[in-house]
Amino acid sequence: MRKKIGYIITGILCFIFGAGLVCAGVYFFPKEVVKTITEKNVTISDTGISESVEKIDDSVVVIETYQEGELVGTGTGFVYDTDDKYGYILTNHHVITTNEILIIYSDSTTAEAEVVGSDEYSDIAILKVSKDTILGVATMGNSKDVKVGDTVFAIGSPMGKEFKNTVTKGILSGKDRLISVSVSNYDADYILNVMQTDAAINPGNSGGPLCNINGEVIGINNLKIVKDTVEGLGFSIPIEDVLKYAESLRTDGVIKRPYLGVSMLNVTSTYQLKYTGIRLDEDITEGVVVVDVESKSPADEAGLVKGDVIIKIGEFEVSDIAEFRYRLYSFNPDESVDIVVNRDGKDKTIKVTLGSN
Image (cartoon, rainbow, N blue to C red; front, side):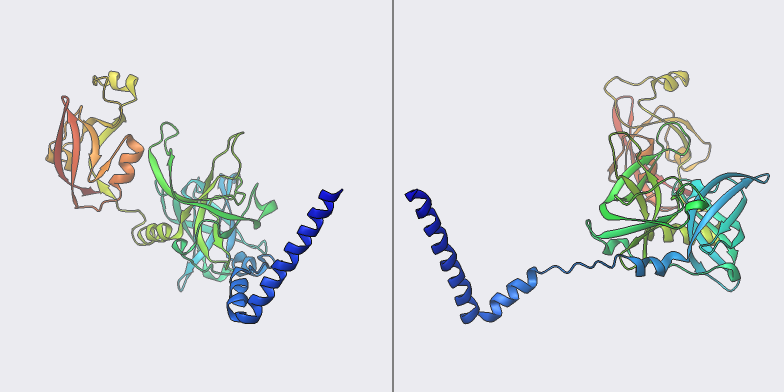
């Protein structure tokens, strides 16, 4: 009993002593104490992001693709620019499965769209509609200004027009993620540099905008990892990359990329390599195998031959076709680059002047 009373008395004395120190601090150093408390304050708003959503909502559209009058696919897009005659819509390449395209706006009005340009490797497409049909134009932001942990939100049409302009909120979970993707439905053959978010991205959200807290577009939603053991892994292409690709698509209808002039297989594609008559040493486990060289191509003129295993381009080592193509496309047409190959068990550096596709 005496111990309990002692603990209680000790606690009271500590409280009085601590309170006295705080009061003394406020009395003798009022500015410092107030400043410290103020800097640690965090203001939390309970109004949500409704104003930011309203800012972009009318620029977001449902995209429906048809084949001989039958609906074959849906996705999302957003109006990002206009000129005197047209409004221009950004979306994903994989959303545009046909040339028969219908746009549905937030007020349920519709317009027919035409493909301006589309690119499978960047997964970007541009559509155009009559300018007098559009309801709003999205404001472009900058993904570089957004930090991991910042609030972001996505707008899209999961499951089609019945749920058009659905808003999901989350955070930016990561930046500069390199995700391997397939455009041929076989091995991964390209890498996308994307941002990661835990904002829900569902079928039909593809091509829709990922926005910062101010309602400015910082990316295009393009894929989600779906596994029983994974939750909240959605990805978006940074808007800076998108706008760079969009400029080429608007001007030329295609994205001009460097051209090498070879057919390739991964070193792990053992069966296919045997079929082409190429046998590799067992210690070669990474790289890209040249299986054919186009006559008079940059590769041919530089001296690349069938059976060469490309292990490096410029300063970048490459392990497979997806990584090689990603690194190759970081160079410009007509640029000279060193390519390191393994030929007959020895490394050889070959300087190649890249062409244009």
